Length: 250
Image 1 (cartoon, rainbow, N blue to C red):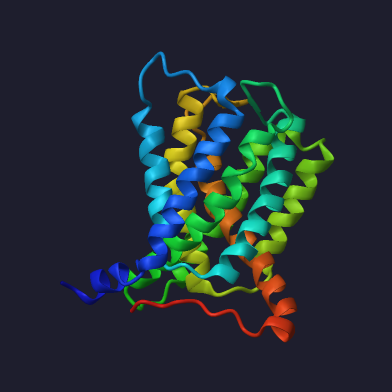
Image 2 (image 1 turned 90 degrees about the vertical axis):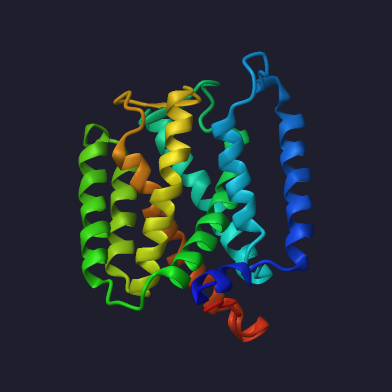
């Protein structure tokens, strides 16, 4: 067994089981509250099941309560803004025509924590190399891609505000390796999330693509943006609560 595999397995402990049970109960509660949108007449959607099983496994790995709570809060706030931007401007819309739908918002903190976990797992398995070229080959090109994708909605104030926010994330210094792992983790998970959502027409983009590449990559860039905000929050809390401890499993 390699050191990387041992490091990954070390992320699971007895708290993981309790977290898993709590997550399943939470999913059940959300499903019950919004049961009117569930239709099992066509059978089980195995892609959706696989996505949530994988995300639950991520949430049960490397638990860091304070770090997780900060990212859940930032993910919820960021998700509310992103969903409002997209649905108010008609960049995308949901089958319920809500702007935005309340039921989609709990997915954002879950995804924020899951992507943070996946990023940390990538940090374990990726070699200790200089990732500067990967950073320049992913983050700046994404900003260009997203600006082009949203250009038809440039007249919307929320679109211009989102462009400004993307530029701020790009120029505000972060940890280069962490930026790369977050971008890769978010985009990797985003492939499955966006394919599921657009192929099932739970949501649709104005281009009708299944899915648009910009939307897939946006999950990674959003994760980088959330990390920028979370880092500020943690610095504000540090004098009161002490430094945030991040488990490492190398």
